[in-house]
Length: 403
Image 1 (tube, rainbow, N blue to C red):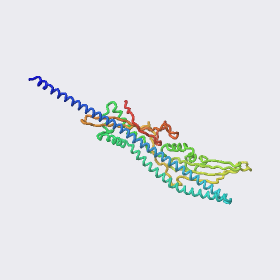
Image 2 (image 1 turned 180 degrees about the horizontal axis):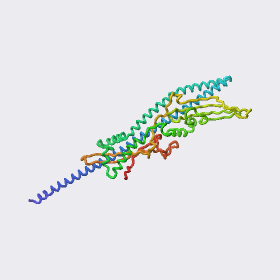
Image 3 (image 1 turned 45 degrees about the vertical axis):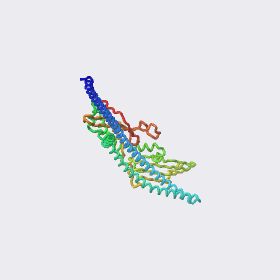
Image 4 (image 1 turned 90 degrees about the vertical axis):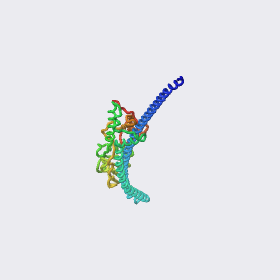
């Protein structure tokens, strides 16, 4: 046998062995890159799912805040309208008195009668329009309350999980989000922490947002209403008064002025608007009056006040009935850390062979945070979280699973 034939016979097995090693290396590299790619998909899907769930939650919390603010503003607008009608009735009475006393004065009587006619026309139009406005507000409040119930249903854990699962499927159809077996993929000792996080997330979304009524919320809505009125001096002047049923009590309102002429005659104008003790019981009541008093030289003292003109109005009288704020949504008072919701997303992907499983935990949070660059009309950064200021936002957070 020649040496060249022997060398050729030895080289062939070596080449085959090298080819097998190369193919194995390529297969290992391919499987490794595939696993890395699949794990990257799982991580991205978990991040996107958690953020989407948090954003879904934040939007519904902000929707509740916007509708609560709208109902509060509408309720205040009804009170302002009632005060305006009361004031306009007083003005009509005063202009009628002036027209009566000046009827014999040339030119002046004509002008005062024309002014009184204009006031009567404005009053008639305002009274008719107030019926439609107040009843329309009642209908709108009912629609808003219903929409808030739908928004609350959107916060049920199954609804939020479904949103996150749809996002996960957009990355890979076989990918699972927050499935029961997903927790088993988490190594110890973190499995218990993840289990607790999921339980807290599901219970928190249900228990920390609740429907309430002004008659049963321990004065919460009344305080918000009073704070909103007192925040604006012009508004407070029209709506300042006591929270009580019955006739408004003069001397407690803000539409007040007085004047004395030559220390012989004095006038005073008084106006007050009562808030109902609860927003859904009796609505608003308002009253205005103009009084005069003369100085009595025989007694060297002022005489008692005589009323020259007056006006009264109530929401129920103008609209037939006014329900006010029957129901609204707020954060539960017993909730701890009420301004922060955690939304976890555990993404799992089963691959071939079945023993290979990719899993990743992402956590997003929904927090109540007023903007730092807002003007003085906005609440402080340290203000208590609530569902009246639409400052809920979503962001990804690093999961804290330390035992």
